[in-house]
Every structure is written in structure tokens, then in C-alpha cells.
Length: 447
Image 1: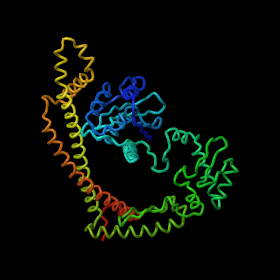
Image 2 (image 1 turned 90 degrees about the horizontal axis):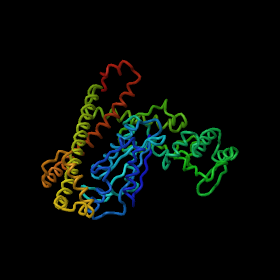
Image 3 (image 1 turned 90 degrees about the vertical axis):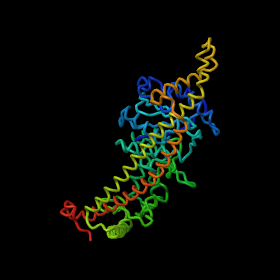
Image 4 (image 1 turned 120 degrees about the horizontal axis):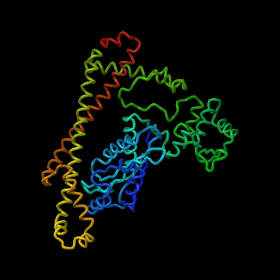
């Protein structure tokens, strides 16, 4: 599980970068990485990129913190996840410094990236939409690495401290939720639940929303702040045994959905109405599944498996090629950045080399000299010697962008079809579950 938090850097960029690169926190700087810049000169390189931007904005950079649950991840694994997250959300367009801190009981990443892109010099817009993309990407990467993931909606707005307090049993919200869950089955209505909470020492405040406060708690907690299942109308529905408003089945818009395992479904055990709906829904989805197989001329389980495998291969091939193009595009963008810096500052560097008083010259052009030498080092590291032509790189970038666009269309189409066939296959498996011989042979005729 990883908890993410972002905030802008409006001043003291160098101080922020120095802080996250602290050797005592990063295992002697072994857990420090960067992209498009050197960690030691990142503040100067950020500023150089911002000089070329028309829309500079008010921020010098953005600071993202990604904290992991104690004991769930090694520092090296956390750093790897942080690097994957940085590359995904920034798309190879922004310089960044990534560090992993190990001085606390929980390993956590610090990512500071430029507020302006070095590829198109556009300003990064930090808002709710961009943050949700960061959180979704972080959750997905944690899942891919075998870590736990916060269930969307259940812990909305919860800080890392609250997560830890909930796990340790010390959170006011966690204790209130536990009390409600324990008392609710014996209540006949919402008013009785509130009376029982008062008998347990909770102070109840009524208004637009109902709030509760434990004896040792400073502020009231709104019931709806506990999560979607604790809003007043949902609690009333849970007490009455109806389907929870927050759990109402979503409309499928004609798409085939998975058959529900009614026997092992918690909602079905709690609500007779949901059980009735689920049975009808399963009949509809089973009919849709069989119609799909007939319409697509699939008469055996083997044909279904072959079709799904072919679609999955198309999807994976397109995704791998997209990743290759993104990697090459990021590499080209870096070379173009350093090429521009090198050519623009070479006259100053030549004057510096010829100067009789280099120390005095350096005092007036220190940042330019540092940037030029950093660009020269990057050329050697990237193997971009002799100096490449900017126009040829722009042509290649445009070609890669066009190819990526067509591959994205191919990837989305094959992914959608693969998901549909995966649903069909899982429904067929469920329908055939009653006959072990048919499932094992995988040769059952479906028509």
C-alpha cells in the first residue's frame, strides 16, 4: 500500500532538493536518481528550462511524496516503484529528482519535478484530475509489485497517519466505524443506532449531517466522513436490509457482465432483494453470453480460448511497441534538450576557456558554465557524439508520435475486445462449473 501527497514548490527549490537528497536519509545517496538533469545541479537546470517558457506559472516545481506501509517494501523496491511512477506520470517531458528515505519506520519516496516541460516548455497543471491520475498509477504499480492497495472510495481523504492509526486501532474514525458495525445488526432504525451510540459514550450532534464525538475526542466526526457505507441514508438502508444505495448495481449499457457467485456474495447474504436481482441478472447475462458465442461462430471451448489468446497477443504486442516508442521519444527529447543547451552556451564556454582570468569570468557566468559542462557529460553518456542535427531529431520524433497514435488505437481496440472475451470465458467457466468432466476436457460443444 502506498499513500501519495503532492504540493507545489513556490520558493527555495534548491533547499527542497538538498533536503530530499540528504545522505543520512538516502543511504549515502545510493537511493538518489534523476532524469533530464543531475541531482547536484537540478535547481539550475530547472531554471534554465523555465527561462524558455512563455507560461512559467507561479511554481518552480512540484513535490510528490509516496509513502509505503511499514515492512511491506524494501528501499530498493520502493525506489524502483517510484521511478516507474515518475516516468509514467511525467512521460519523459519533465526533469526530476527521485529519492527514497529510510530514516522513518515507513519507507517513502520524494519526487521533485520541474513545473515546466523541457520538450514543449509548457507548464505542468497540478489539479484534482492530475492528482487522481497519480494516485491511480501508484495503486496500479503497487498491485503489479504484489503490494496491498487502498480500496477506492473507502479511505477518501485519509492521511498516512490516519491509515496507521486505523491499523493500530487508535483512530477515532476506525473506532466509530467498528462501534456502528457492531451495534447496527440489533437496531430497528437509525434513531435506535444513535441511542445505542450515546449509551456507549458518544455525543451526537444533529444538523444538516449527523456527527458523533468520543469522550476523549476534540472534534465531532460526521458519519458520512467514515465512508460511503456510513452515510445516513445508507445506514438506514443497511438496517432495513435493502440494497445499499452506494452498492446499487451499475447499468451495463448493453455490455455483457460477469455472472455473480450468489452463494459466496456478502451482499446477497445480507439482502433478499439483491439476491432476487442477482438471479435475474445471471439469467440475462447467461443468455447474452450464449448469443455472443453463436453470433461469433464459436462452437467449442478451444475456439474461445484461441480467440482470447490471439486478442491478448495483439494487445500485448501493441503495448510493448508503445513502450519502446515512448522510451525512444524520451531519449530523443533529452538529446534535443542537451543539444540546444550545448549550442547556445558554447560561445560563452569558449570565452571562458580563452579567458586570462577564469575565476573572475566564472563568477559572472557560473550557471552557464555548469549547464554547458552538464550537457557535454550527457552527450558522452547517451552516446550522442558527434552533435546530432536538431531537424533530423524533430523529424524522427514526429514519425514516432504518428506511429504511437495508430498503435494506441490498435491497443485500445484489442484491449476492449480481450476484456469482452475474458468476460465471456469466465461466464462459460461458471456455466460449466457443475460438470467436472466437461471443464477438464475443454471440448464441450456449446451449440
